[in-house]
Amino acid sequence: MRNTRTGWPSICADKYWIQMNYYAMVKPQYAWTLLHFSDNTDVLVDYNVRSYPLYFLIDEHGDIFRYPAPMPSEGLEAAIEEMLQQ
Image 1 (cartoon, helix red, strand yellow):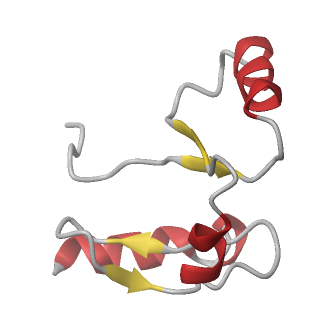
Image 2 (image 1 turned 180 degrees about the vertical axis):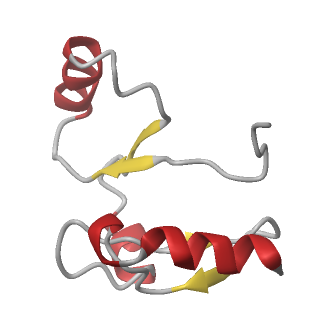
């Protein structure tokens, strides 16, 4: 059964939206939501983005559950399971 409470967006901070759009076209296997920060550096400041990649979990209410979240290879699955149990 698919859990509709979760999603896996990627936020692109490349300078040009067209680069992200091209990347999405040549990588159709990346079927999740791709978002562009549209030169809104406030987004990077608000989420304290200092390096890439940065993982964080947002719960079903839109609140930050874990920041930073572990990388997929370092326990992200357990953190997601913990979040879904609440």
